[in-house]
Length: 543
Image 1 (cartoon, rainbow, N blue to C red):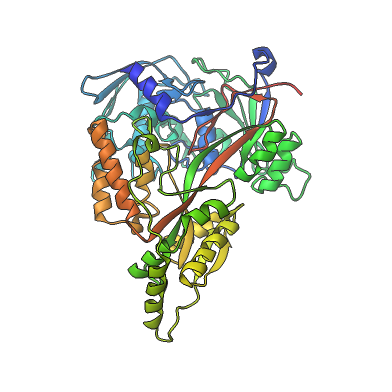
Image 2 (spheres, one colour):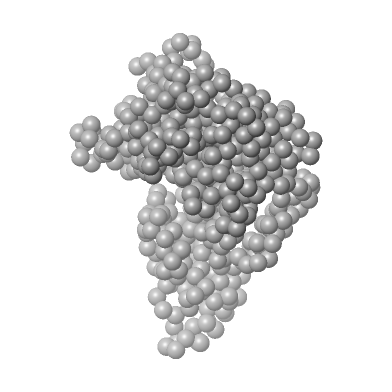
């Protein structure tokens, strides 16, 4: 069973491993201080609450779960020395290796029990607590109808932990590598008195690194954990996380959330690695930087059904008037045409979804029908015309051009004149959530690289639940771990087709996340969709 999990993980996890040419000798790249650019500072390093890319990256390096990823992206034992899985696939039994927290307190099975209970406790409000829904008792606890001590996790003794599932879940080992599944020492948590994970003294660590510096207006530094005794000691001496806005920076305009500024800092060597706009990838690659990119976001036109432009007929007309062949050639080259919602990197039971599930839906292109619908809709308005129409878009590279292409399609093919307005991504998503928009070009993405995770954003509690109905929810609810591979694939196809049938949303193009590392860097792992970086294996050649 363990070998099967590792083989599946290698397929299921589309892990991007930076390899910068030939090896230059381990001694030369070890013990470096690596500087990594981040968009924003973390607000918490509590694993159960970590949500942003920066927070999850730091948690990944500070903590170690029962499972973790090795240098090749395989799921292997982390804090667990060994484990067994029952024949029915429902009970994991872990034997923990000897390990200590940053304060020399032993890491025990009780720490994992408390951490997992916190993750599903509604009081915690863990953003990814639902990922543990396969654990026995978790659905009822998450719903607030059962006590946390009914969760199917048991500390048999200090070094033995059992986790019982209510249904088999082949993806569960991957869930145990994520921040939400990290251990939490209850005594340390209680001593923090509500500040757990919010400052230097209240942040724990049992992983490859420890937190060395976390001050306001200063870079955040993680040092190699000298008390870590596991199989994955940190190769670098330290990792420094910088936004560019720190007090040590003399430039008053410094801001690494500004992509142009971050590009300049990569080029001048201030940063060793960091996330970039996909539009910058070609230029950096030409300068010798290693680039990795993965398609992780589908941009779709969302139409507000509670507006004059959002009637069922107008939704149909707006979809019918988008010529996908024109969009394919007119969009910026770093975007790719989307004829379905699911990005290329998504997997189902470890298989690339697009390779095993052919597209079964064709978007209609019928400008004549679209014009007729618009004419009829306009006639029914009191003053014989529609009110002013605006398409919101994220104020990010290439998005204004993309929004213009879509608006031009509507003007040319159905005679609808549409304004476009740029907003920050957070402002755009807030407007959609509040229903304060007519149309919006919205980003759809998954919390991890699975098809199920992508679909969850359209179910109750998800940001786009309002665009689907009970039929979609029923199909999604049936995608359980107990299904055979064939049955799950068939149900996933039905769920995808159901989503494509809703005219209130129309996928238009995909975008990719991209990361760059300097020519001196080697072996930095970036996990697709989450953007989490693992520095344990990273090396850097001296200047």
